[in-house]
Image (cartoon, rainbow, N blue to C red; front, side, top):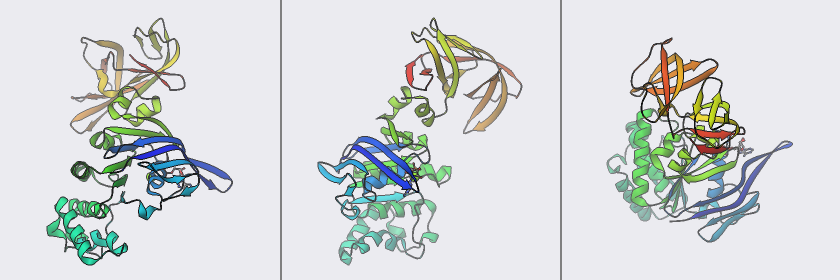
Length: 357
Ligand code: ADP
Ligand code: MG
């Protein structure tokens, strides 16, 4: 399996008179056999990063290595895409409808003009791995959605790639299918130990699949670390909100105390001056208790149901707070709210992370 290294990689596109820097001065290292995630909003440069790895784009500046081999550098692709031994799976998992599952899987090998018996052996092997031997003679419309995904993944793996690239592979699937597909990809990656990069805008994809992830915003890799560390100590408030919902309150800290529009909290912080305080929905409580700080009285403005819990929006003055509750509340109901100490994030005025409080 292959290790991938980016050194100072920039990719710019010229569009009319303007230049878009899709990837800016990226330094990345993706270990051999690692399952690596790239999380970023739409248009942040995720697909461009994958295309750079695949050799489908050349970096405007910088170098890309596969192990110790330089594969792209300063405006040039040195090892072309077809020699990089990469499996690609895109958003749609689209199969050719007029081909059987077998022919779909065999397609990349037929393009390479491999001998028929070699093709057959590989198709059988990969179908064994993905448990789809009994659907090989069927057409895509004759098999279930889950089987179609397995066939699409088999097609991505049939060349025995040393690298698998997945571009938003779950975003077009409904919730049940998405979980099945995540489980499948995770299992196959583990089984084959193949270096894999998945990109997505959805933090749930990251949490269900990878240990380590890079967060990209506007072409810039903001943070590369273990996912739990990014969650606990996000580089800034934008990264924090990409990993999951977070309530942000503007205010200042004076004498260790957070002073906001709607509430004040005794944080014991050494920080001074203007700040933003971040509170995750799961860290809010409706009952007084040990290790909690009071946020005061909020009024419920919305209560919605999601996946076995209630998502409550409550307000106090001009501030709004979202939290998760096991039980529903009525709109207009007044609640005394509390927050778990040691779970809140302090950011400076520009959004840079300061400390956990
Ligand atoms: P993502 O996959 O995160 O949504 P992309 O990598 O597709 O983002 O795009 C990043 C930025 O680069 C966007 O502003 C996009 O419009 C621009 N871009 C991507 N490909 C091209 C291209 N071939 N020509 C011009 N601009 C491009
Ligand atoms: Mg994309």
